[in-house]
Image 1 (cartoon, rainbow, N blue to C red):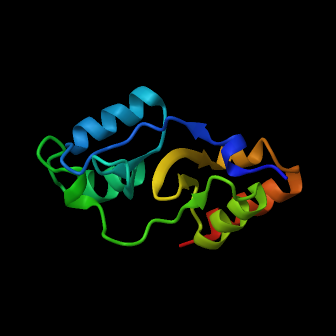
Image 2 (image 1 turned 90 degrees about the vertical axis):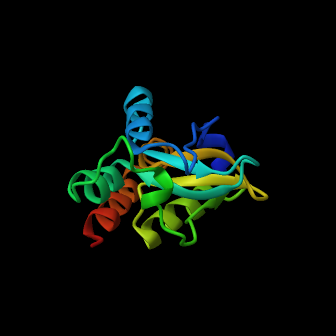
Length: 140
């Protein structure tokens, strides 16, 4: 059984709540990623900021990315995650059920990595990859 730990990107870069959106967007661009986990100083996951958040909640809303912080736009809702020792099938199911393209991977309550749709796609049969893309694309 392949686990999340085996396919995840380790050492995921994180954003802090007090970081500006400009800084978070620049880091996403520099790293060529579409999301950054938001962690506190203890490494506990508090949320995720995505490129879509930046586009919709900042740019389209007319907010200044130099003064708006990650904390200003992040929601206090429970973050969809996967455990490091959960199976790739569980990661796939979680992504489909919640229509997310990326999953923070946690071990106990600490962030240890990220799994993307691409990580799943390269590690499962092609027919299951199609199901994942279809489920995410059909979500509102």
